[in-house]
Length: 218
Image 1 (cartoon, helix red, strand yellow):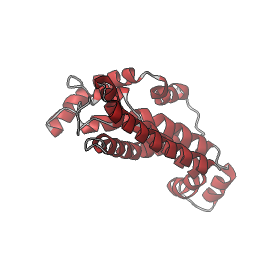
Image 2 (cartoon, one colour; image 1 turned 135 degrees about the horizontal axis):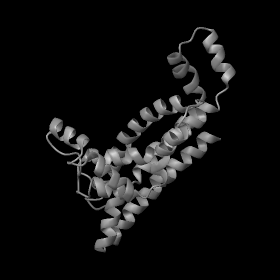
Image 3 (spheres, one colour; image 1 turned 180 degrees about the horizontal axis):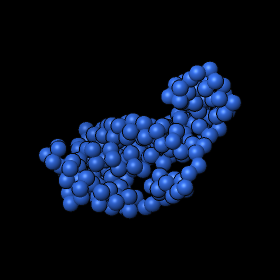
């Protein structure tokens, strides 16, 4: 195995693991807030949450540059705190992966919560459970299949993110070069051996992720 094979694979797994942490936390919060709730403008809010699923990756990357770029208020605040811009850094890759993976987690978990038997939740309330305990010890366990499936699919999506990562984080070997961007560069430079190795690794990991989803649904 070539010595430079593992760096993009390891970086992809690290980025996807961090992204899934943020995705699960944000998915739990937003899914809990939006499930079984009706309010004016809900359709607009949900559409915004799900937009990264349908937007071209270059559009997502462009928006991330606008939001976190050096000329934006958020970008300037981050640079003043950490003494460096967020673009073309490890964390830029994490942000890009988090944004594109979030809709899968949100939609899956919200659907799972909406399928929970309301009689069980009401019984817990009658027994004196607070909304926090109800959510943690009743709703989440009952919706665990949706939570796990959403988490696995989100991890796979974060692992395979390419376009937004390339625009926002760049392709710096050992720093922001994930496996998808490494494949692109390898093909562009004619290094088909490395391209095939990275492609095979991505297919293998993605296959295992999807297999786990199907096993949890059975």
